[in-house]
Length: 89
Image (cartoon, rainbow, N blue to C red; front, side, top):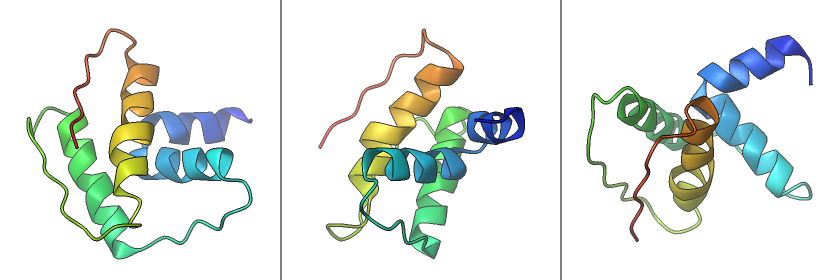
């Protein structure tokens, strides 16, 4: 991975989430959608501590679990390993 891509993935949660999806599901196609952009924006606000509690209500198979409970904790822990994350479903 080149340094530019690594820098983007460190600082852009949406790009990180897409890369995580591709890495974890190599045979599936990632289909970007406005709803994923909105979820990423809200999770970015959580990362900046502008939002302290977030409920994501979207239909099943909308990648909410991937974004909120797989990619987001990995993103936070990659940036700061001492971060504490609580996820409930």
